[in-house]
Length: 451
Image (cartoon, rainbow, N blue to C red):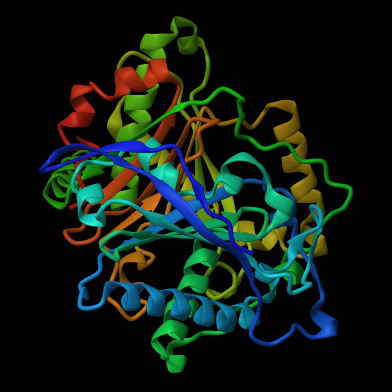
């Protein structure tokens, strides 16, 4: 199935001045598994952790420069064929991704295939990346279907955007009903290994999660995140390696020798600065708790396999009460505490049929509002996105498109140098305050050019 369509142009700048960027769809099709899924695997039961996740798409984007310009049309054609062929091979191993999400409990593994779109972008990727593309501009490379609707409940939608120079932006929209960030990386490592013909590097996924955390059909669950229909503002803040090292050193001095991770110090600073913005924009916020939801990977805890596919994340609750002067040290300690609470013992308490009473109790606390988040944060740091090579080189940039209906922070690596980029979504009023916070800007830059 092919369709040609022009998307409303965006503006970008290069050395010649202002130009227009347009994204044109050249094809739409379904990529099916190379081998059919056995009849015995046609119905995939989701786990209770999948069951309780809000159904939405999370677009994750990899940008690759093209260094082969000898015969551009041939290069683009070869890349396109390789991506589709290797994707088909990977879908044989990740067969639920080629099906349809039926409801909160099942995926029909019907081999209908991944919804796959290919576009042409009428500018050079180097120009796009050298001019600080904002969130709105990056989102022009996201499939319209993933932005506006569940699109027939595809677990995975992929849009391959090919720039005029042969550079590529691969947007992988994962349905959070089945995939978390680690499942995305397991799949992407499989796909890139298949593209390079490196079968020895492929690690088969484990689909054991539904047996470890069986679904609870009677469970009524309310997300602790408060979603809004109002579109929030989104901004990217980059902590480069040297400034991040300085922030860690300053934090560790306050903690009297206790060591903190990059995630902990960045999360605490952003939490503090967002809380200050909430105080300034709304005086009544001072009378409420300003809790941070920290999403924590359960793999490796209590024998949960590292290669397990599905949602294997849990929310830690870090608590604070707003005040005009929040202590950075206190917030770091709260984050450490909430991470420690999601321990082997906690995972054991929610596993199997014996974990049903605990999960039901937590669900009741969420429904009553006893557990709620004013801000949530997730991280894809240290996952190896910059090692994902299809055979034409490693990506120059990874971008985590953020939720825009909730106060949310997504962290990921910048690439070389050990930095972290944070994609932050807040109300427009609070974002305007955050973007000018001197405490934050002492360690972070606002949307610097990726190249």
